[in-house]
Amino acid sequence: MSQKPHIILMDHRMPLMSGTKVTRELLKIESSACIIFVSADDSAREDAMKEGAKRFLTKPVRSKTLISEIEDVLKLKDATTISTE
Image (tube, rainbow, N blue to C red):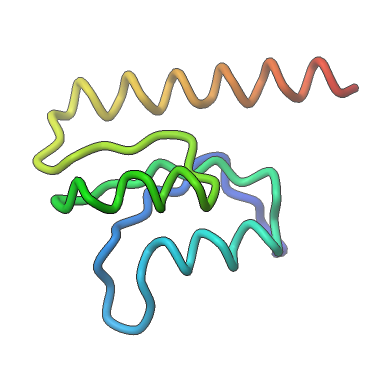
C-alpha cells in the first residue's frame, strides 16, 4: 500500500466479497490497519472480531457513536505505536 489509512470502515455485505473476508485479506497486507466493522447483521460480529476488526457497530449508527469509536481506536493505535517504539 502506498498510503496507509489510519481507520477503515468495513461493511459486511459487499458485492464481490464479504467484509470479513476483505478484513482477513487486508490485514495480511497491512497488519497495522484499524478496522471498524459496520453492519446491520449483528450475527457477523463474532466473525468480524475474529478476523481482526477493532470494533463492531450495528447499523444504524449514530454519528456521535461513530466519532467516539474512531477516537477510541485512534487512541489505541497511538498507544500501541508508542509502546512498540
